[in-house]
Length: 435
Image (cartoon, rainbow, N blue to C red; front, top):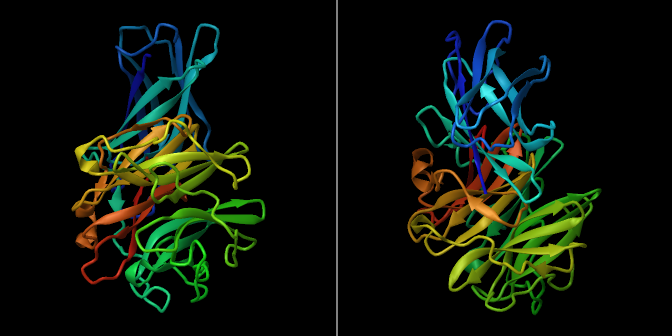
């Protein structure tokens, strides 16, 4: 199967405004500062049935810019946008056949900044029905890792009666420009409950109440020892939390479900909704998405003695069927050590995007993967794309529990430190304008 490679370079022609590494992208006056966008189409990757490539740049308050070219197989081709006002733009690329039918399409957000050259490589991958999507790798100048640790990390450092050893495993839902976080309140000897916090910027958090949002079960119940990893999905006016529960330390664990009308007061199902099968000694939810009317639950599992990522489907969110091809992700590189797990997924522009962590003894690191169907995944980019050695001031000696969200047109991965020197677990985040 043939793959199309697009190399896109943004050349900025004015140098009147200095670049910024702040969390919020700088604002420019579009009437005075301009850049140039050049799409360079590789000569050895143009399928013979593609006769026209069209690119569109759109931005709120600006006219949509359009340019196209009729490439010839075996020769290089460029698409150029000149006098592009600096700022955030949305790029869409279509590849058509002789009948004007779009065979390949893809889109992404780009930021045109003065004095900076940005290179974006776009891979168009055809699928079985003849359509395709662009898979994107972004390199900023000579820096091949555009993910940056937030300078104010850690952003969540809580010690109270419910969290005597701090907070781990952040799971975040963005709703009406507010971040709602459910996290593990770390107790002694593996005991834990689930706490709740809110934020309008993701850097400053408020705890509305001191009591746990989700308690452990009563003595003898399946989740009486610990409840953790509460990932939340909102549908209409109802919240669904999938969580890991256990009644012993470091042993059998299953997945439970709790329902809430406000995200604060929860009512549990009396029994777990998904239990270990086969060689799955203990399982826990990592993320959940809904595709049309079907739920996709990503969970951690044990596969041939190594931690891996599994997938289960449901039509009602209660009764689950495992994917027959499990695991969907397992360790294949030395940096991943003895496992790939704690996955987090978002879906945008026809592409599923995943961040996951490794199970290496001494180095905590995050990897990226993409998928066109949420089932078959490809690890992309220069993995790992972020390690504990890159945390600000080395505040985290090891990182784990990544959770990917998109907030105000920015990608963020919230995570926590592991094996802290002071015994207190804390939460921070990394951020990037591209994935």
